[in-house]
Image (cartoon, rainbow, N blue to C red; front, side, top):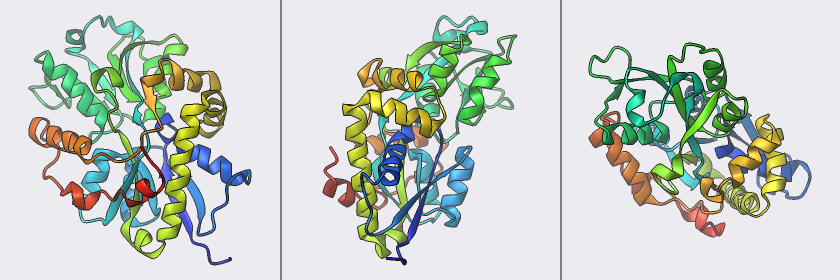
Length: 312
């Protein structure tokens, strides 16, 4: 079939997107075949690129931060959330040179986050506000802790070259945290599951016109991704090797992220939970005030494909 549509899916080099790498490998090795489409993962450097390409239609789908996807939907881009790509899986790392012992020690320092509209920003806000600290940008006179947005892949170098310890640390998707810890420049401060166990973070979204035009293709992709999630959970050794190649990382670091401890990242419970998305939306709207409006999550989330794929 020469007229099979090519479906491009944007992603970053993070463990949160590992199931896409597993599906891609299964297709390349002929362990799976898609009858209704060709899949093309499209690697991006940062969240701005993913959001822009999804909004313009340069890519048909994306693995993207849940709050960013909500914001794109709110701006009038017709997309649907089809699947969680994982749960948990992020880490707050402290810079070894910054003398951070407790949350209060972040005061007066810079902390890197991957994007403003990210669950990472929300989780860090939660930790700080519980101790009466106010995060904000450098121009905000009320900010006790300065947040700077840095692409995940650039965070390890930012810490490595910060000899004065001006950057207190960062909160990000793996494997960049474990990479910095392994290199001796950082120490773990919190795993994200310790702040909110099984929190959503990245989600799989598709443009609605693709779903309407090619529902069989969308089902094929979703089913494969769900199966990949089960495979990662069941076979972390193999998944770590695949992840090392797909993410350009050391397989040992990926294995650590997948297994130490096991609840650190969840890949076998990908059925979208509207209630969890509502928690994120309410917190960012009511407490952080970085969402200017709320969306109707029932209209945004489409669980048909995940359910048909056997997602838990």
